[in-house]
Length: 539
Image (tube, rainbow, N blue to C red; front, top):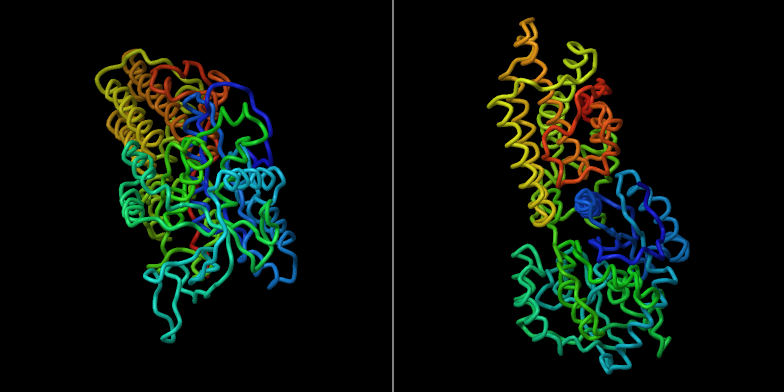
């Protein structure tokens, strides 16, 4: 499904399962870290769609701020021209390439966003939540954030201090700003965290936020007057809104805040904000405090994923460790890419990308365990039954073990992926079932049973092959959120498209109902799901 620009209306129904990614800063092209969070959100929302739920998935781009302005100037174009070029030539095409099924793509330079942002901050100003003052301190343009002195790293000279994230010198800024009374919300935030222990996940992220808020919050500078690339404050146009205050509001402006009350009631509060751990405080402290001040509901969960590491450092363009996703998809394929990062790195922890580990998992888990199973079953149905799936008439304990294994896999995968956002654990549960089916096929040895031409022998062969094909039917449904193109190929090859309808219409609730694939379905051996890898491309 292609990325879309805007959905301004939706049916008035029950609340949707609303998932957001961070909106990504368009100072450069996307790298693996950006794609990691976006693929996770896509798998999560596809899983909930497979549950039969109404889902809304939002992503987009953050296009204001000093960093964007400087990058555009360095490239000899206006900030808007720079943003337009990057969004249309890099960001949207990558999400389409990675098969991201987002329902909306918001840009912070769109009028549907900027108008609502001005209304939001004007409301806070009218309520006395914003006041004028002065501020000075160390500022990282890369983070678009003032830093605390204790956070900084030593630089090349005694006076030089570095941002702990970007490892680049911070700048000393001194300007007259407007401030949001963040300090007034420390107690309310702590009370909310206590009453909603799952609001911030994982536990390590929650503990970090608790420590930060317990140290007493300082009021937040929310405007800048030293540059003009941003949303002007409606009551003082000499100031533009601090880029983070602008950006955070995308979650409500895209949901219809101030423009479509019916839609806003359906979508807000968000079910899950997916964020990188480096922007956790903005989402778990500043954003909920702003919503409290505005009298709006808070999101249900803020879930922070870890960093993808290269050489012991966070993957980023500024550290020269950014890797383009297409460098990997051109070699491994899109579905293997989607599989690998969520399978290999537990969501919420840091993890290192390894070409060798990717290759090993591709070969062992995807090509051998899964792809080879699909090929063997299709080949034997073709060889022994001319592609027409036989009926199972001689099921016994071995088949019951497969049925029970499927029920266990569905229950575990649904809990881990759908509720706990433990993608690695959920995928492992599905592949344990696939290994179980492989073991079943090896133990039953249908190629030997086929030599028994007695009625009993032929009934046994039919049962073995039906059991294996039905297990693959269930596997296609379970893997559809993770590897949609591959699952669709398998679905079609099993004849399930004709007999059961579209793969996307199958639900998690019914996937373990044994016997859904009818006897007589036309099974064909299509292309190999995971072809043998060529040699690793040279650098």
